[in-house]
Image 1 (cartoon, rainbow, N blue to C red):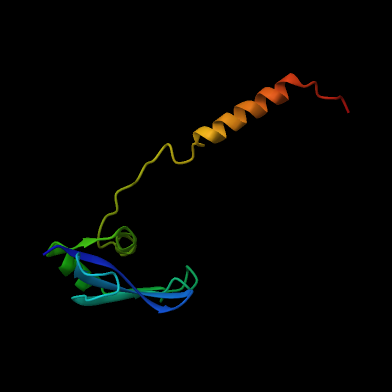
Image 2 (tube, rainbow, N blue to C red):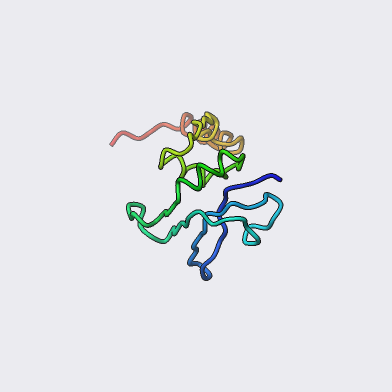
Length: 119
C-alpha cells in the first residue's frame, strides 16, 4: 500500500484549514486517512508559532515505514529538521515566453528607428 503524508482540507469557504494526515495514496484528498499527525492554518501570520502544528515523532515513524510526503508537507518537515528537501533549479522559469520575446523585439525595433527629441 502506497502511503502519503499530505494535507486534507477543512474549514469554510475561503477560510482554509488543513490537517496533516497519513493516508493511502488512492484515497481522496478529504477522505479516509490512517492517522492525523498535525495541522496547518494558512490564515495565520507566517511568523505565528501555531501556524503549523506537527508531531515530528509520528512523522519520523511514518517516513521510516515508507510514507512519501507531498511537496508542501516536505517543506514543513524540512523546517523541523525531520526530512531534507532537495534544492530545485529551474533556470527557464523567469525567462519570458515566445510571444513576449516577439513583442519586446518589435518594441526595440520601433524604438531604435525613431529619433528621440532632445529636451
